Length: 160
Image (cartoon, rainbow, N blue to C red; front, side, top):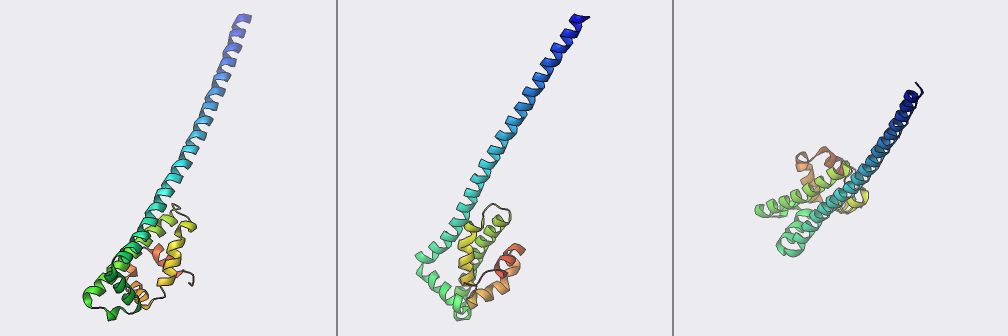
């Protein structure tokens, strides 16, 4: 009887050790998974920021490299009715492209893929251009094509 008890207590000790090792393995796995998720989140945020920065710099680059478009943009910002019809369409397409890029950035920010610091160039630029009569008029007529979050972003811009 005594040897049966000893075997049971040894088995019980082995079982407890095995359970402890299993729990330790689970904890190590959870910690490892947490680290991997954080690293992946940082990589996705960096890629999202790159997309946002590329969109804004692409718009600026287009205007800097094409004097005709830059002139259309400047005139359109002041008074779109001063543009001939084909140039007014180009102005509207430029704004549509810029606002679509911003809408994407606003969406990324609302999903916490980019932070306020990454959003700052859009906030500053849009605070300024929304003061332009042509841009304000275009937004009034076109805001229905954009997300509600974009509308909130535009309506809550700080003064330049």
